[in-house]
Amino acid sequence: MRPLPRGGRFAPVRADEPSEIRAPRVTIVMPAYNRADLIGESIDSALAQTFPDFELIVADDGSTDVTREVVRRFRDPRVTLLELPHRGMSAAMNAGVRAGRGAYYARLDSDDLWHPDFLAATVAAMERPPRVGVVYTRASTFADDPRLREPDRGLPLMFPDQPFESMLVRDHASAAALVRVECHQRVNGFDETLQWWEDWDFWIRVSRHCAFRHIDRELARIRIHRSNTSRIDGVRAWAARSQVLDRAFAPLAPLNGDLVRVRALAYRNAYFDAGLHFWHRRLLKAAAREFRRGLRASGTPATAAARLAYLLLLHHFGRFPVVREAHRTLSRARQRRRRAAIPTI
Image (cartoon, rainbow, N blue to C red; front, side, top):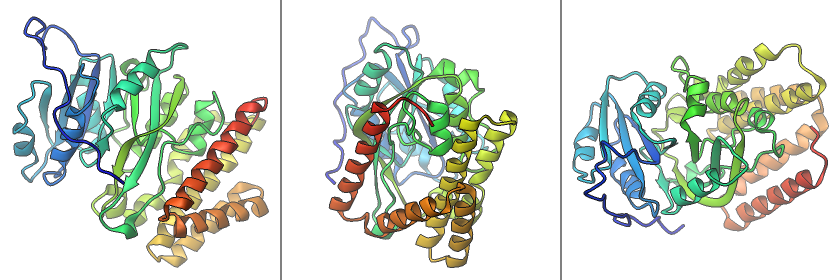
């Protein structure tokens, strides 16, 4: 895929509107830990936004390399370095949001990239009625090592106009999203006690209170590499994925009929996702264990087995553009059918 444009497409700050007086509309929060080799390109993609009214807060989580020196080389007045002790990405994100002045914020990880129109598109969608709390887009994945390829992200809500049920079944929004700060504050931000899947946990909690809007455009690129957190601690991280659902469903008991069906889909997907990760790494016993758990959790083993077969085929052949496009077309067709039907789960 053609690289995203870099550098320079932004309006200058007006001399009669000093940044310390006039708050920007958007805060970009970039959590970073030892990303000296990649963070410059990510900052470039933020500064290349066609929507200029933002501040960029790099929340450095106690890096031990030269990440902070790389950030200091950027002379754009909208870039701020927030130097923090090493407490994890959730703590860095929360600190960055607290330091921000915008009514909205967007997370841009220090190894990912945005299309130049990301902020322009998401701000326009955020400010279009009816009111929503989160706007998110599609995102492609890319890797220098083709063996690390992962499916693209940012699918439409599985259940239209039901963000909570949709987020339980699939982490739709973690790729690229714009968030009202008030929604972040309402759920007390990211849970700093979680070591993995803090973003999915956050979206589940936000989706109970705030409406979501999807932009069906690929406006971000997610870099996959061996130093991603879920790859460094892959076995433990993926084995713990279902624990996010344990936390989400615990306060909802007893469940009504609709949530019972959602719960089955949610655990099926969580176990299948973990199994696919282990399958890719050739940890076949671990993969088989997670697949069995998913089949049992689904409540409909035959249907779940067909779904698993489809996912395995997609996993092996998804590197081919024609297969990815066919998958997108099928996903959009399913979404249209759901929207045409009376919303039921």
